[in-house]
Length: 246
Image (cartoon, rainbow, N blue to C red; front, top):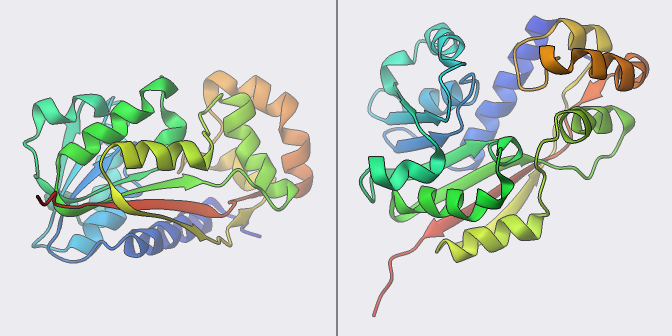
């Protein structure tokens, strides 16, 4: 079990770097990273695309921009990343069609403030990816295997009121958006950390949010103190935008 925030930071970076490799990001590609937040996944994408690649990181707010820039500087990839503030549904009005080889997102769906917009969000993303390009969405699996995993999901689902639609819903939205060869890959994780690290950590989406602190301490802390927190398996949804032939 991880006992320091710095060790957790390193483990999360390696996990996200592995996920970025899993979805097929390689040197020289143009990647759209939707819902970049603090940029902890963006840095992994930027590392893989190399000096000849390009990343456009999109978020609906710039409240995490300073922290994202710090992360980009920490990994020396800032020159490869451009930030765009917009709602994902507006992408086709701001970006030309077929602009990217790939579009990726890390835990974007759970953060949607208007869940009914999921079909429109995925459709908008698909429109700016080139023909034969890839769209990959990485999400937490709510089918937990331990109390520690359930603690992490509960933080978001029960306290943060985040959005965790059924797998079938995500697949249906991807298909209706025009993606083919759609598949789901489950990736196991091995990241568990103590309650003390949870209290001290501010390096990921899974920290204690100030507006929910009282609720978290009252409802979740007793279980976290006893069992810790653990990342559940990760679901990777991916599909290709195939060229339509007559």
